[in-house]
Length: 394
Image (tube, rainbow, N blue to C red; front, side, top):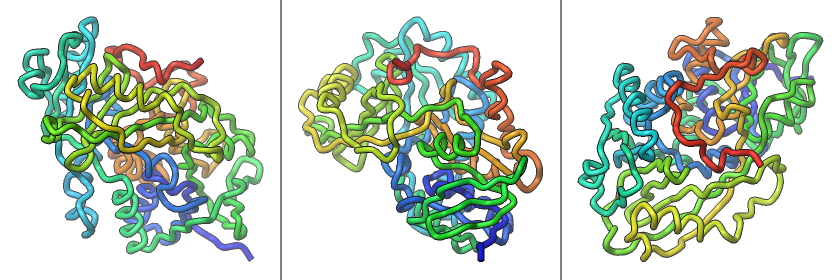
């Protein structure tokens, strides 16, 4: 005999766990999350988990802004548990041709209510004396931002969702989404069928495969995400602010007291998400080049470790959120394109609102709907920056 649920969430990363928490918070009695391995065993557990709000479009920025208080006041708002947030400050730097675009985006962000200012190269050097600013046109500074502990974040969402009555099943892969004509009826798992009137696919790199099996082709591809961690030299003992370096198409942030995490651009597409997580041999050298170009004193850093994750990237590099037209009861929260961690609390609240109230109220997520691709539109704002090389398809 099949189990039953009101809502099934497929995927136990940060967004899946957030959706389960938000649904349970709204009083949904039978929320079941199915995760093929351990919670946060995919991209979420290997995320650099930046908590910042600078985007070049308003909708992403609003999702990050709505999520920020959850991270910053985690213990209070999540009913206990350790804090997951580390405050560092954050800068987004661009080359001179994009300086005016950055200033326009800062104006947009400030209108929303985000605490951010535009800095000149000289002002950035005053904030970070070790930084090389010769190739920078402007920087956006968020003094309140920082990063989260990814494992503790997912664990905190699991704990709170469970306290509120949700059931989170680890080591329970969903093998098939079940549908009858134009409506979902549940899922088939490794341990049996679960019937439900609503299914949310939050399966990250596994989402395209699951959806394809029911005839839904997502405009998204699986991509590698590579990360290197170094131990900073003694002269950089004080943690630096987080950098998103649009000049180089990368980012780096401090980790604990002595480490720095750097994102290494990766152009490996259409990977098997169940395949080996092998970091390319050249990744440490590329990470070192990124760090030493921006902070020359990083020349004295030493390699600590490196790792790869798999994520799902949409065609326009923005998340796919919302209901699926023509398949009643099917919802998507996937293809976050390497940028889903910081918006996860708001994504959870928005999906719960969409399922229970018929529309998202925390933030209007309609711009992220699947139908945008057929309609030829994108959430992207008018003042973009240089394309990142790791997001350019070969």
